[in-house]
Figure 1 (cartoon, one colour):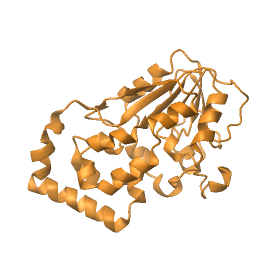
Figure 2 (cartoon, rainbow, N blue to C red):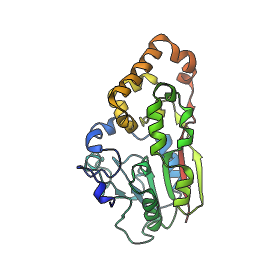
Figure 3 (cartoon, rainbow, N blue to C red):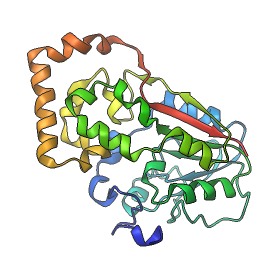
Figure 4 (cartoon, one colour):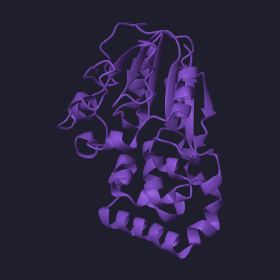
Amino acid sequence: MTAEQFRKQDGSAGDADYGVIGNTYSDYRRPDPRIAQAVWDALGDARTVLNVGAGAGSYEPTDRDVTAIEPSASMRKQRPTVLSRAIDAVAESLPFPDNSFDAAMTTFSVHQWGDLTAGLAEIRRVTRGPVVILTCDPHLLDRFWLAKYAPGVISTERRRYPTMSQLVEGLGGTATVDLVPIPLDCTDGFNEAYYGRPEELLVAEARAACSAWSFVNPTQAGQYTAALQTALDSGEWDAAHGALRQQPTFEGSLVVVRAMP
């Protein structure tokens, strides 16, 4: 099957259906300016930028000429009016000639692509400069305490995220991989963003915005949240991890991959 044939009713092309989980996504997944700076620094002095899997526009620079690609109609509708309208297309089949852009970026998206190898080849084909990927290193996910309370969520994330070697190889074999510190008051609500605010993961909408939760059996997900609630109520969580409530940043699995042609 082609990437187009895998698309869901609202156009979502990956394993998550943003027609279902995307309605409040932008309420919880707001770009964090410190993480954004890491992405923008990696773009260098590029003026024309392709954003693949652009979603609601998180981390798009507003001082450059950005072309956004987003297959989900639900996510395209959530883009602020200050951003350009996103093109309905998929990573595996980009509608542009070779070397069309100074740089390309994709944030929290590569694990959604139906054919990672094809998507990376396409983004490399249309980009004459750096390709910048904000993603999570699956080998570093066990740094986060959620592995104890919700092991199925972490194992789901580990399965979904491509390894760094897969990304580097798919982009031509030469790339840098840099850890991105996650701030304590991070405004982008992925799982590790709550490293020092565990109560946030008891909120159903916050969990829904961390799409890995949607792949866990609802009964099991309920058991996970109950276990976390019990650990918080009993003081167990604070006894083991309470120092994180005051820790300015956390080095978890968040990384920026930057590949040059």
